[in-house]
Each structure stands twice: as C-alpha cells, then as structure tokens.
Amino acid sequence: MDEETKIPQATAKRLPLYYRFINNLYLQGKKRVSSKELSEAVKVDSATIRRDFSYFGALGKKGYGYNVEYLLSFFRKTLDQDETTEVALIGVGNLGTAFLNYNFMKNNNTKIVVAFDAQKERVGGEIGGVPIEHIDNLEEKMGNVSVAILTVPSQAAQGITDRLVAKGVSGILNFTPARITVPSTVRVHHIDLSVELQSLAYFLKHYPL
Amino acid sequence: MDEETKIPQATAKRLPLYYRFINNLYLQGKKRVSSKELSEAVKVDSATIRRDFSYFGALGKKGYGYNVEYLLSFFRKTLDQDETTEVALIGVGNLGTAFLNYNFMKNNNTKIVVAFDAQKERVGGEIGGVPIEHIDNLEEKMGNVSVAILTVPSQAAQGITDRLVAKGVSGILNFTPARITVPSTVRVHHIDLSVELQSLAYFLKHYPL
DNA sequence: CAAAAATCGTGAGTGATTTCACAAAGTCAG
DNA sequence: CTGACTTTGTGAAATCACTCACGATTTTTG
Ligand SMILES: NC(=O)c1ccc[n+]([C@@H]2O[C@H](COP(=O)([O-])OP(=O)(O)OC[C@H]3O[C@@H](n4cnc5c(N)ncnc54)[C@H](O)[C@@H]3O)[C@@H](O)[C@H]2O)c1
Ligand SMILES: NC(=O)c1ccc[n+]([C@@H]2O[C@H](COP(=O)([O-])OP(=O)(O)OC[C@H]3O[C@@H](n4cnc5c(N)ncnc54)[C@H](O)[C@@H]3O)[C@@H](O)[C@H]2O)c1
Image (cartoon, rainbow over all chains, first blue to last red; front, side, top):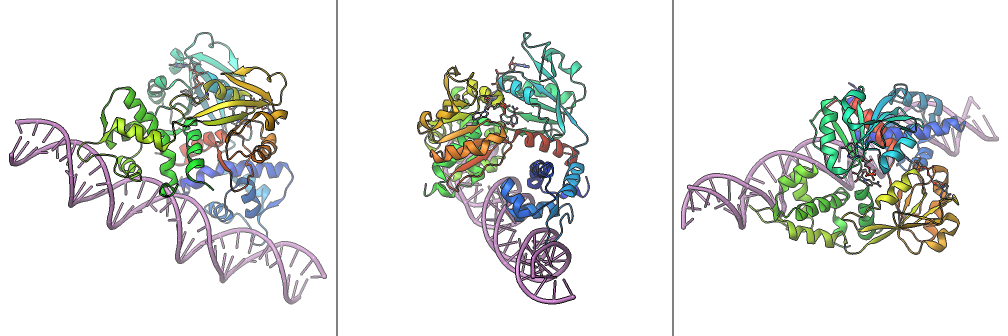
C-alpha cells in the first residue's frame, strides 16, 4: 500500500493477465521464460513487460530470463490470490446468467456468492451454485461483499447502485450503458459492450492498418 | 481518413458514448447542451469533451453550448450510423446466447447477422432472429461480414481466428482469455472479463480512494 | 441597450505510458 | 575457462492523454 501505490495503473491492469499466462506456463512444466516469449504470448511489448516487472524489484536474471515458479509465487502473493474477494451479482438476465454459469473461477481470486433479481420466478433457485435472492432482500442477504456486478436494465442501475453504496460496497463492475454516480470512495469500472463493438467498427473504417 | 487520422485513439473510443448520450437528449426533446452538462452525464471531464469535439472543428457556440440536433447529425455521419456493419458471432454458448438476444441494436450501427457453433443441437434454429449455422460451414455461410465476435472456448480461439482472417474479416472482438495472433492488417479488441474483475479487486486493495 | 453571465476553443503545462537502446551481468558451448 | 551469446533493468527520449485557465464571443437579464 506504500511502495505499491507507485505502480502505474496501466501496469496494475496487466498484472492479472501476466498471472494467468505464467500460471499456464507453470502447468505446462516450463521452468524459465524470457520477456520476449511472454511478449509474444500476451501481446505486450517486451520492454513494457520488463518495465512492469521492475516496479516490483529485480525478478529476473540477466542472460537467463525469469524463473516461472518464482514469478508465479510472486504474482500469487501480489494479486492476493490466496484471499478470495466475494462478489454479488445484480440482475439475473441474459448476461447475468452467463456470468453465473461461468463464475470466474479459473485461476481466480474472485467468486460470485449471491445473486439478486426482481422477477419472482427467478428467485429461490440457483445457477452455477449461486443462490438467487429477491432484490427486496438485497440489504439483508448480501452479507458484506465488497464488489458488485451490475447486469440490470439501465433504468434500474442508479437506484440499485445507491443501495449497494449505502450497504458499503466499494467496487462496481457496471455492464449497463448508464453512467452511474457514486461517492468518490467507490470505484466503478464500466464495460460497455455496445461501445466496444461500435468503436471497433469506427477504428476499422478510420484507422486502416 | 486523412484529417481524421489525427484523432487520438482515446477520443475515438469515447465517440460512441457521446453519440448515445446525445441521442438520449434528442429523444428527450432537449435543444441545447453544454460541455458541463454532458460531462456530468458521461463522467468525462468537460475540458476533455470540448477538446474531443474540437478535433472535428467548431461544433459549438460560445456562451450557448452545443445544438443537440446539429451535434447528433454530425455524430451520425462521423460514426457512420447510416451504414450498418454486419457482424458474425462464433460460439453460441452462455455468453454468445446473451449477445444474440441483445444484438446490440439500440442506437447502433452494428448487427449480428449470423452465428456459428460446433454442437449439432444448436444448429438450425435461431436466437434473437439470428440463424445458427454449423462451424464447418463457416466459410460458406458467413458472407462477407467484416467483424466477428469470438465467444468460443479459448482452445478453439486461434483456429477459428485463422479461418476468419483467411475469409477476410478485418476486426475481431475477442472474449476468450486467449491472446490471438493475427496479421497486422487485422484489428483485435480483447475484452477479458476475468481480468476486469480481478483488476478491480486489485485496485480496491492497493489504491484506496 | 449595457452589464453580467455563460460557455466555447485552445495554448500551454502537467502527467502518464510506452519505447528505444545499451551497459551490466549472467548463461552456455566447446 | 573463455569468448560468444542472451537477456535483464533502466536512464532518457518520445509519445500520448488530460487538465488548467483564460480570451473571445454570445446569450441573457434588467
Ligand atoms: N445481453 C447483452 O449482450 C448486453 C450487451 C450490452 C449491454 N447489456 C446491458 O446489460 C444489462 C443486462 O442485459 P441483459 O441482456 O442481461 O438484460 P435482461 O433483461 O436479460 O436482464 C436484466 C435482468 O435484471 C432484472 N431486473 C430488472 N430490474 C431489476 C431490479 N430493479 N433489481 C434487480 N433485478 C432487476 C430483470 O428481471 C432481468 O432478469 C442491460 O443494462 C443491458 O443494456 C447487455
Ligand atoms: N460466460 C462468461 O461469463 C465468461 C466470462 C469470461 C470469459 N468467458 C470466455 O468466453 C468464452 C465463451 O464462454 P461461454 O461461457 O459462453 O462458454 P460456453 O462453453 O457456454 O460456450 C462456448 C460455445 O462454443 C461452442 N464451440 C466450441 N468449440 C467450437 C468451435 N470450434 N467452433 C464453434 N463453436 C465452438 C460450444 O459448442 C459452445 O456452445 C470462453 O472462452 C470463456 O472463457 C466467458
């Protein structure tokens, strides 16, 4: 929290990606890896990888590369892979159901532990092992998860957000097109799938490679 | 393509977002809007918005703001909203099905026109009006869509990608955790949902607000 | 109509991120 | 053990993105 505060955000966003690939290498039995190899696998410039790693000190050895096992144990510590972050999902529709079935469980430190929906028909059962509760019981049943995934219709997004924030949630992954308002102590990541698709189309037409 | 090449990528990524909010304002019957109002709605600094707009020339009027209708027609042209980009979706599983039901149709210039899967049971029917074909008939049935959405298991990603590229696809929206390799003439946007969730958790622990 | 208020467009400054390029330090084959 | 080769870690430069702050212009109010 003191030294690490200095890690650039762009670097922090790449850490889970590195972790996943290093884990793959480990499972494949590889003993060492160079920034060049890693670069080809994750499609990030090798200098950027070395720079990213260097924020954590000298993890590699010159002329050799990085020891996979050491790197893995290092990232596991750094990303708190031992400590699971519990997550609530709000809105068990098309997207929400897909996420529940998947549940982000592969090599992962996050777990959806409860889901909520407004439709009575969906409530009571479970999907992918996650119980589905009625949204009226949000405050009561959410325990103290710190992260929520929002997959409700956009009109409902702000109202639900306010309730989540009041209950102490500190991070929201928002899949609705609505831009939600939160206190400055809460972090929101927007994933706007329509925008992604549109901007890809825009890039294709206007930034020919 | 000449002048526009100079538009920063960060700006280009925000254009679809602006477009959607301006369209909302138009539907609400608003006649004018300031960068400050827009800023609150889309959560982007107002100076950034003015700068973004300024790459396209002087769209506003001092002391007044921007005329909603003019802005809308301008963005419609710029984002080619009149011309629909046809999209193919590969992998009709949990995520793929959600996307087909949604089909990105709201205020949008993109449309999924065909989907493919390897399981015979899924083939033949349609979801959200999109016919589902067998992956063996990919080359034959995909027509000449220019964009593909990849929602297959990660092991299948590279193989499918190679076939898509060979068929002339120029943009891929990749939801699999695999980092795919493509010729430099093809643009890939990765949306890695596990990474998004993990990095949100990391930020919460290491970058307290 | 005049003064006050609003708001754009942008030059210049700041900050963040990426990339280059190379010395230093190690590996490895013979 | 030596020389050729590899690869890291990092200063410095380059690039990219964001924000401040203000003159210019228009609207609005009384
Ligand atoms: N499905 C997609 O491919 C896709 C793509 C881009 C964006 N989105 C966005 O993601 C969100 C969810 O999309 P979806 O396709 O899953 O929609 P959906 O309609 O299938 O699911 C929404 C679910 O939320 C529930 N709900 C409604 N109001 C609620 C409330 N107040 N509290 C709790 N639950 C409530 C509904 O009962 C429903 O089950 C939407 O905002 C949509 O715009 C979806
Ligand atoms: N569902 C999620 O929430 C989620 C989250 C993060 C990442 N992902 C990734 O998205 C991808 C899809 O996830 P999902 O949950 O929809 O998986 P899924 O298993 O439900 O769906 C995959 C579909 O692809 C089809 N398929 C398999 N091989 C194929 C091939 N060669 N050609 C065509 N179709 C083929 C399968 O028949 C299946 O219908 C996976 O790579 C997954 O890692 C999913």
